[in-house]
Amino acid sequence: MKVLFNGLQAGNRSGTGVYTRELAKQLVSLGGGIDIRVFWPRDISVPKGVDERFFLPVGAQSTMARLVFDHWTFVTSARETMSDVLHYPCTFAGLRKFRHTVVTIHDISFLRNPAWFRADRALYYRKAIKMTLNRAAMVITGSQYTACDLEEMLGFSRERVRVTPYAARSEFRPLDEAAQQAVRTKYTLPNRFFLCLGTFEPRKNLERCVLAFSQIAAKLSSDLVLAGRWGWKTRGLRAVLNDSPYAGRIHLPGFIMDEDLPAVLSAATALLYPSLYEGFGLPVIEAMACGTPVVVSRASSLPEVAGDAALYVDPYDTEALSQALIALDSEEQLRCTLREKGLQRAKTFSWARTAELTLAVYRELAGK
Image (tube, rainbow, N blue to C red; front, side):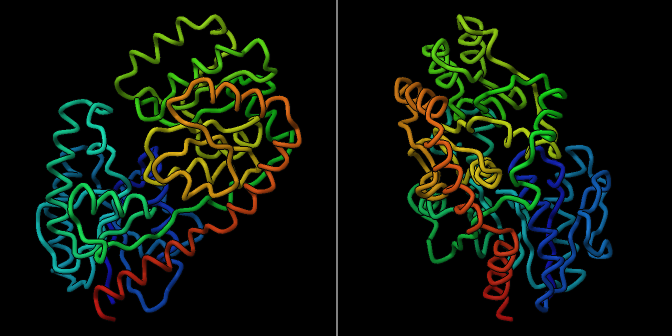
């Protein structure tokens, strides 16, 4: 069975990029009778420990070059090589049809609440997702929640959706104090801190994190760290940051380099992830794998991912989030319990398993 995998989003600094890199790496390593070729951005290093012959470099640094590849070249290559399956791993497929097209759709938050996005982006995404579903023979999602979302909001049959949960990479594990101190120095982080991780955008609910912290900061020994890139619609977040009486205890180190994430997570008192919507929520599993307690919202896919290993809050209840911060800051036994539960929970997810389930989708579709 011949498979072509579109890995051009491997350089994306988000969960989508992590998924693309890790799945490509595992599929190439898996074997299992699959003849896979991964189209890979020329400026991004091939994953370590894999046979580079399976990775085909593509010069698609510009947006236009990538669009040409996604919408034209990818299908042309499949037809020329008589491939059985095409896989677009980043939510949207190209314009041209191919019989056995697989698309991984990570979430459809742009349909759930278009106000979380810029108007032009939300409009484009709405049109692109409908076109994608018209071309997809099979869809992969990271959670049952997203699979149900596709059926509920777009009428896409659950019979054509397969769920392949994501995972934390092997690098995510509890790291020692020396590693933790190194990242504290590198990013000017306080000794104790609650960590919010991800692009600054409305659905991440960071405004309420700041408000909750500001209400009870005087009772806490941990500061607040918002780590990530500034995204869109951040006026409200900037306002609450400016207005907080404890602005000096709220730290914005910017984007955390991939290689530093395990140490930063290991150093945190807890990960705060009260997101309003997630298709999976990779940082939750990554934090658990590092032995870091997690606070999540009882919303979207997060209960499915975190199970009984997290402290849950209503994402719209700032007071509830404040109480969660107080509890985690002061109760060592609660932190230990969540740490142990999280470590065990993270072990139930693996990228190797994700790849095995993905290969099963290819086989089912191609009949091989």
